[in-house]
Length: 233
Ligand SMILES: [Zn+2]
Image 1 (tube, rainbow, N blue to C red):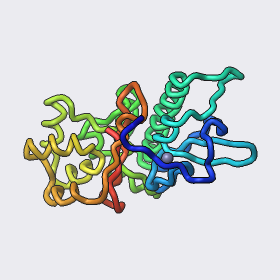
Image 2: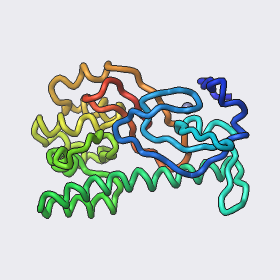
Image 3: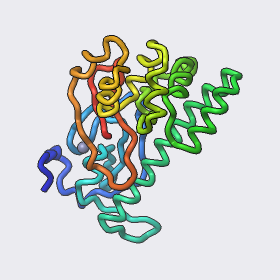
């Protein structure tokens, strides 16, 4: 059993009685709640049904409970369920980012934004400099979108230096999109924007790193705008 047991709400009953509809919701403001365990401040939720009842559940519950799952009429085993959840999740997260960039693109006529979209499509991540450029204009779409829906590249020395070379306001804009691990790394290199240190102790952190197998999932966390910090990395 996993160390952290998540208690199911009483009316949930046996998870086996529920089945996935394969509908997924991406809440880019991180304000959804899990219908199984009640956890809040969730970004991604998965729809499960039992008869006429429908609930939206968090990634942990989606991967930890033996929820029934069929695809094209065939029953899936636990591994297949995880793969299916993972694949759908990755595609949805990718689409969320693409749509946000496209909305910016539709408003500002800037070849730099076109290039950012091409870059994102190829890498599914943004370099620090591109992230800074995008985040500077992102409010133009008039929707609340947490910058942390974007994955920022900081693995290579070149990308670390790229981050460090940004002006302070740009680093501050990209900072909320970094995972705690990335922030520690950047801080150790002396690249943390002023006032960033206090932000790290803010709110609770929920590690969901084991929730889904395979490719590292995009970091999910609250931006400084919101109350708490929540992430997978
Ligand atoms: Zn849950």
